[in-house]
Length: 393
Image (tube, rainbow, N blue to C red; front, side, top):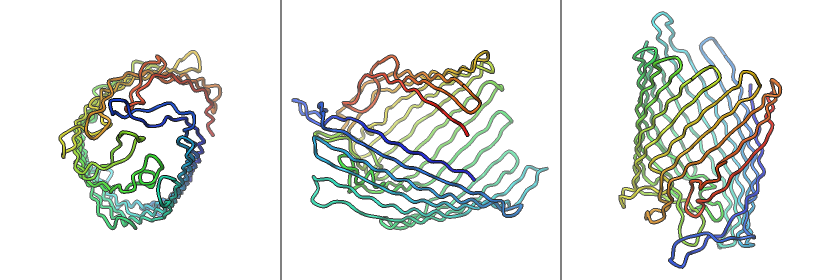
C-alpha cells in the first residue's frame, strides 16, 4: 500500500486587462486584483497478488480546488471537487523464460465523479453542476524476444458528452542491447474540465471536447554505458483542440481551434562524465498549424531547449544542479498578431544532505534576472529564490 497528501495555499497578485492606444491588449497595474487558491490532493493505492498469475490494484483519489479572487474589487470564486477510483488487474497469460516470451492481459475500470460551482457577478446565472464518467479498458501486451507489442481499447461514458471508444497500439523492437526502435499510435478524446469551462475571468462555458489522432516513432541508443541518445518524431491531428489565447480587454482564456495539426521532433542526450557529474541536453522543434487560417497555434513556440548539469560532491554532502532553458518566439492569439520574442532562463538548485532522511535546499529561478518567456504582457523580468526542507520517511 502507498499514499500521498498534498496541500497548497497560495496568493497571487494580478493586473487588470486593458487596451493600448493602438487597440492592442495589455495589462495595467492593479492593487485590487488577486487570486487566492487552496488545493487538497490525496491518493491511496492498494495492490495485492491474488494468485501467481493475477495481481489486482485499487487506487482511490480525491482533489478539491478552491479559488477566491477579486478583479478590481469585484469578487469571484470557483470551487471544484473530484473523486476518482481506478481498478486494474494484470494477468500473466503465458511465460517462457527460455525463449523470452511473455503475454499479459490488463483490464479494469475507472469512475470519476466531479462537482463544480462558481460565482461570477458578470453572468446572469451562477454555475453549479456535477457529472460522472465511467470507463472500461483492456490491453494486451506481448514480449516476443526482441519485440514488444501492445494493443488496447478504452470505452468512456460521459454524462455530458456521451460514449467514446479509444484505441491504442504500440511496438518496440530491440535491435541490440544498446539500440531499440519504438512506435505508437492512438485516438484521443478529452472532455474540458470544470476549471476550463467555468473558472471566473478565464473559463469558457461553451468549450467543446477535443478529438484527434496521434502517432510517434523514435529510436533509443546507448552507444556506451555513459551516453544515452534518443530521437522521437510525433504527429497529431485534432478537432476542437483546447487552446489558450489572449484577447483585447480580457484575461487569458480558453478556446477551441476547430482543426489543428501539431508535429515535431524531440532529441535528447545524457552523458555521465563521472560518478559525481552528469549532464544532458534536450531540444524540440514543433510545427503547429490552425488549419482554418494556416497560422501557428497560440502559445506553441517553434523551438524549445534545455541544458542541465548535476554535480554530486564526493567530499561533502552537497549537490548542485544548473538548468538553462530556451524558448523561441511565439504567437499569443489565434490571429497571430501578438508575439513574444525568444528567452533564456537560468535556474540553480543547491541541496545539503544533512541526514539520510533530511535535505535542506536553496533554489534560484531566473537568477540572471533576464526577460523570461511567457505569454504576451507577462513577458517580464524577475528573479526568485526559494529555501526549503525535504523530509523523507
